Length: 95
Image (cartoon, rainbow, N blue to C red; front, side):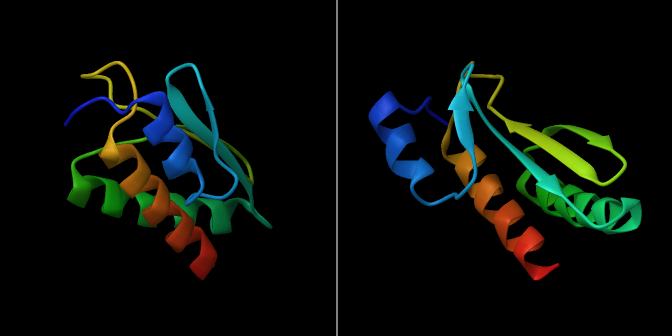
């Protein structure tokens, strides 16, 4: 996949609410009611990421999940990052 331009990134950001772009990656944070709800979502995201062969950098503390997406092979963002972000939004929206 090719690295997206700044203009392409800005356009894609319109479709993923709550994600910020900095340091050649997109970032978001989700808050859940408890650890089990957070872990359940992480499990669902992990299964989707594995199917897409594109994995997030993430950090979990109790009921908080911080996610960073980037394509390390191009040192920036690709279509894969925004496809996974959209899948994550769908998964979290189902909770």
